[in-house]
Image 1 (cartoon, rainbow, N blue to C red):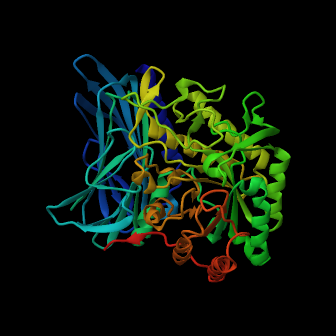
Image 2 (image 1 turned 90 degrees about the vertical axis):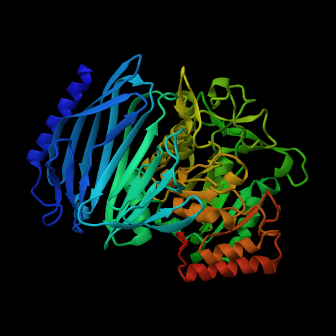
Image 3 (image 1 turned 90 degrees about the horizontal axis):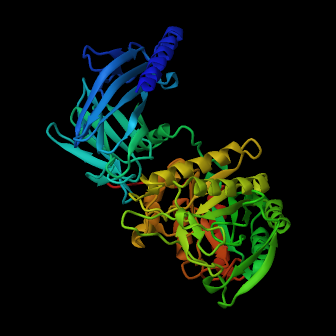
Length: 610
C-alpha cells in the first residue's frame, strides 16, 4: 500500500507541474472546468455549447462495505485529476486501493469534448463484486430524448420526461451489465434542449447507460467473486455536437484512440472475389483474368480479390514455431465441402508460389486480401497442441470451431488469456506481415465470432474474462498491422464478426470490428446481417464474400443498392466462379459495379427506426 500511495503522490506532483507549465489558452470562451464547492471532487464543466454539467465523483458499491475518500484534487481549465482511497471490507478481509479520475478537454474540440480515464488499483486482488457508477448532471437544461444504436441493428430514439428514465447496455465481461435495450456498441446520444450530448465508453468491458431528465449515468460491475479484481482502466468520451446519429457514432472512436481508422481505399471497394483454392489452385488465375477482361484497368482498384485456403492446418497456418517464420514449403490438403467432388486433394504450396499469386492480381490492378487465420481455432490433432490452450468455461464446457476436411483432430477455441496462445497468434500474424505485408492490402481474421460474450475461463489458477482478453488480442493485432504501415500505408486488418448469424447459429456474438479496421465476412453477403454490422463499422468498411453467387444472385443486386460491395467466389458453395458463370449474370454484376464506381456510391452507414 505504501508503494501505491507513493505512486499517487508522484502522479499528483507530475500533474501540478503540468498545470504550472500549461499554456493559458481557454478551452472555450468562459468555459472549461471549474472546481465545484463540493468537497468530494465534483467538477463543473461549462462546454463550448454553453451547457453546464456537474461531473460527479465515482460511486463504488458492492455486496461488502465499500468506501471512497478523496485524498487529492487538482483542477485547471482543461484538466482535472482526483484521487480516492478505496476500502472494500468483507467478513474475512479488508482490501485497500485507489481510484483515479482524470478529465481532459482536448483544445482541438473547443471545450465540447471531454475524455475521462477512470483507474482502479488494489494492493491485494479483491474477491467481492464491485460496481462503479459515474454520472454527469445537467445544470441549465433538461433531457428530452435518448437515441440508441440497438443490437437489432436500428438506431432508435426514445422520449424522456421529467419523471422518466431509459436504460440500455453493452455487454462484455460476465455480469458486467444488462439492463434495458441491448446495444450494438457502447454509445448513446442525449438531447438537452438545443444541445446534444454523445456518451461512449471503451468496448473492453460492459456498461449500463441510464438517462434521466437531468442526469446521464454509466455503471458497470466487476464480478470479482468470479474474476479477481486487481487493476482496471476505463475510458469514457462525452461530446457536445449537432450531428445527430453521426455525432453519436463517431464519438465512440474517442474511446479507442490507439486504433486508427481504416484506409480510404476501403470505402471505394464495390466488388470482391473470394477464392478457396478453386480448381486445384488454378482458379485464382483464370477467374481473376476473367474479371480483368471485363473491368477497365482504371476501375480495378475498386475490386478486392481474396486468398483463402493457402495454409496447411487451422491454428498453425504454415507457421514454423522453431524458426518463427512461415515454412518455405507445406502441403495443402482438402476434402469434404471444399472439394466439389468430395474427394481428397493434396498438393504442394511454397512461399514463392504465394508471392506469384499475389503479384499476378496486383499487376492486373486489383486490391488483394489475405486470410490470416480462422478465429481462435486450433487443430487439436497437431503435435504442438496442448490441452491447456483451450477455453474451458465455468461448467467445464469447450467451444469447437470450423473443421475443414484437412483437419487431423477437432478444432477448439484457444484461450486468448493464455500467454503462450496469445503469443502464437501474434507470431503468426507478424510472420505473415514480414513475408507479405509489402504486397497485400489487407489481412483478414476469419470467423472472429467463436468467442461467446460473457464467458469466463481459467487463467492459471484463477478465472478471467475470456471475451475481454479476445478484444484486447484483436486490438493488439490491429496495432501490429498499423505498425507496418510505414512500409505499406494501405495495409489494414479486417475481422469477421458475422453479428446476427452468430445469434441464429447459437454461437458467440463478437464486436471485434470496433477495434479493427473493418469487417470482411466469410458468409453469404446476407442483407439480414448488415444493419448491426453497419453500426459496428460506422467509420470502416463492411464487406462479405458470397459463397453462392449463382443460387443467391439477388443478394448482389441488394448489396449494390446499399453501396456494399457485390461478391463473387469459387472453391466453396456454388463452386461457380466468374469464368464459369453465365455471361448475362456476370454482366449484370459488372454493370452494377461500374455504375457504383462512376457514381462514387457511398455505403449506407446505419438504419433508423423512428
